[in-house]
Length: 191
Image (cartoon, rainbow, N blue to C red; front, side):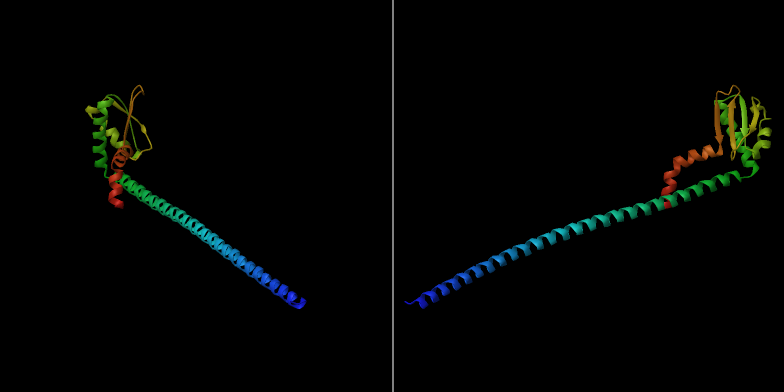
């Protein structure tokens, strides 16, 4: 074997080793690239899941906030309507004829007599004349006219010593009826 053959063999062996190194490097590069692609896909899926989860959470929060706003508006509208009904009821009671107010004052004085047998009776401006006439009846001789007060109707009776007072104004009675029947009225109106 000559020198040329040895050189050729060394070159061939070098080429083979170079090809092996290149092939191994290429295979290693492909492995690294595949692992990197898989890692990138994994990260993308994680990020996508996280984004979807955050988006779902944000949408849920916005929906809840919108429902709350709508519910608040509905409740405010219902309260306004109930306030209007209350005012209309009070207006209708105060607009009743004089005979109604006379009967009411007489009945209320009889009721007050059980709690305060003697005292001063106050009423609304509209009922002053009626009250003074009712107080002339012998049954109510223990009472005197107190004063005109800001009220929609009814009476307020105070004992002579000022220790006791009963509020039999229309508004007080309406408030009692209103509070005890509010749920039923609300259910009837908004069911």
